[in-house]
Length: 217
Length: 146
Image (cartoon, rainbow over all chains, first blue to last red; front, side):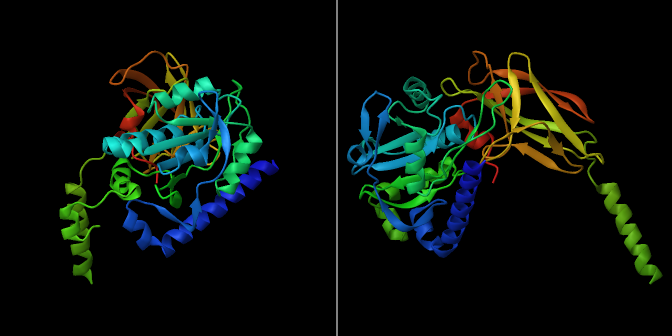
């Protein structure tokens, strides 16, 4: 299957790139906190529009402008990586202040639009946080968007006996900071504590007096 | 040379005498079933420890009210027919790694206890109680496979 081979190759290239970047820019990543992987070139908010779970077009750049934004691709039939990622971010976001939380959002783009109807997406996201945004579109549009963000596009597995199937996809979270620039991605495996440590810096919270004294700003 | 050998043998004997007795059967521990999010399948995480001299294989997992499948790790997460557990090895079903997928999961709640049966080629059937947790609990209950 050429699509799968291509996706695997992209994923491998991306993983290798991430590993290299992590070594080269480890200090910068540590300054933000957590196992962040710096992007080689800061990424502006991409201009794209997909269908949201309210049935209306969602202009990503306009609707998330100025917000701390977590963007990830996945599918709701995934019992493992996708829900664990989203649950960990949701749990960590509870550590933000009310004002910071209002300036933060998570956008989940399905890689499996055939099964992830807007109703299915809405129910799934609501089990983590009712404010999280779910987006869908054609497989082609979503794969093209993923590739433009250096995320491995979806690869559909061979159907099981019960006709269910798995969907491989890039599992990293891209984080745009309030200045509308993404400098880091977070691979799968980031723990809740690491997110909690990273969030204040990602949202640009001013360091406390104690942190300034300790030189942790 | 002879003295050195004798001391070495005596030391070995002492170590063997003081060594803790390892369980001589394969064990299944830290078994968690994660409540589905929305209409999705549930996840199963567990740890298998095989202190025996024989390699073993997990052939299937049984939950009376649902179907349990084993899946591989990212990126393709393909279905697995079996999970080998080598002699002396510990294997995990863990987030981001190989994991169990449960379909047809019934109306359960966080904190419930479920009876699962793990079928091994050598160790036979091992019945274990699993605790039902939420996805927010996975981070502490079942650390990622990295």
